[in-house]
Length: 118
Image 1 (cartoon, one colour):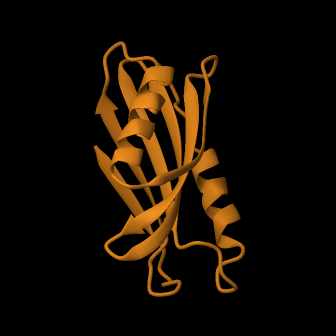
Image 2 (tube, rainbow, N blue to C red):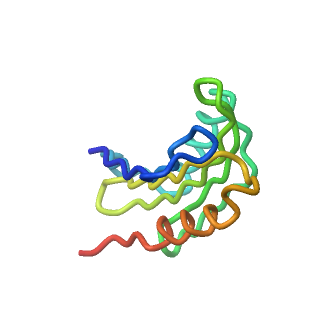
Image 3 (cartoon, rainbow, N blue to C red):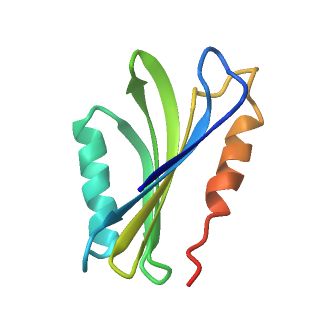
């Protein structure tokens, strides 16, 4: 399952967005899932600025910067593993500029609002 939420406004010719991906991971732990994703992102040329995992909540975060289709992007990803599924919420924007100073916080608020409800 993949869901994308796009901004109505372009910022420096880029449309900031939040997307959600759900995938089956079986018994994979959050530690292993975040480590594998971090490894894959680095292999794709992304620079991982930070990564953390909270085993108690089965959640994690990766913050990264890189190029996609010639555009330098800043992304932060929130991870959760629950009942054999992994949930990845990714917010993408161009690096900070005078045009989007509040955008980073707005996107962070969106991805931090996601919850797994059972």
